[in-house]
Image (cartoon, rainbow over all chains, first blue to last red; front, top):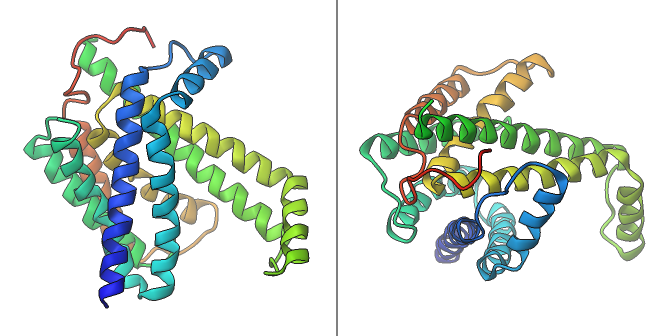
Length: 126
Length: 143
């Protein structure tokens, strides 16, 4: 059981950390100037040169593989609610690391989404 | 339309595009892999699977849609807060349920409807909040 809990913590931290790093990196790069192919290529090139994106990629890859391992170690009913907790942990990360202003309404929405996703995924038809 | 309304509208449109690209990409990858059949875990089996995926049109279309999803996601988080985009992306589960009903003619359990309703209300609540709280000024471009 200890290894499952440790892997769950590892998965949530990698997933949230990867997404937060990507978000931080993209904010530094700035938005694409237009949706023309050259402008999008410039945006991708600028993102590829941002170090935070290179922090995000291995973290997201690690989260993907740890999720696969979790599915082989623990029942879906344990893994799914834990993976939906990413919404809550991600919002905490956004508030304290990215300094986003998370209002009560946004918190309420995030909690509803988290519970809703757990319910949907536990019905097993995704 | 005020800057905040414009930002909210374009971010939600981008999230919708994100959801469509991710779902279509997954669907095309699944279709491509089903056409290829079971992958044998051995060197010749994996080599054959790799060659088959390279030659599969469905897989390439799936990859293109997933690249488009990544671009949409990056664009959305460049405009709005991560805590705004991330829960809004969960709207994909509602879209998947609608696709399951319309395309696959599946029966959806009441439990799943409750989950979908909770996601929709949650996304609606998040969608009403200020999209960008870290850099609330007008953007540099007119997208």
